[in-house]
Length: 131
Image (cartoon, rainbow, N blue to C red; front, side, top):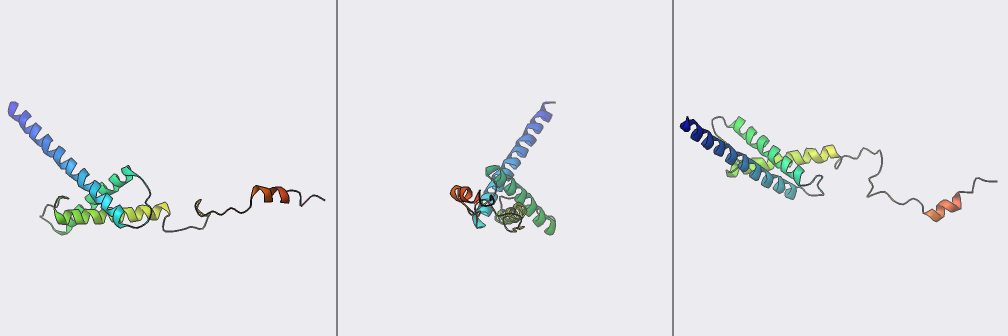
């Protein structure tokens, strides 16, 4: 009974270390991907964390798929490179879906909207139609 508890504690410790490794290196991969891609980024710290972890899972998963029998972790240099590439791809699609690359032409963005007329112009033209 006690041997099972010790084995469970060791296994739990290994899972916690593995989780922290993936989260830590995923965050670093997300930050590096945001640093590489030029321009203003949507999202904050949580989005960076999610993109980094997702990119790490995707990048290391794809590498594991093509190199069967080898274990790929984000700690290895090649694992960190593919994790950053995965986060970069996720960030690209995140920007694409957020409308940073494609302008649908529906309306101008608030930052590029120009002032069409002032309040004074509004008062002057308010009574033009009255006879």
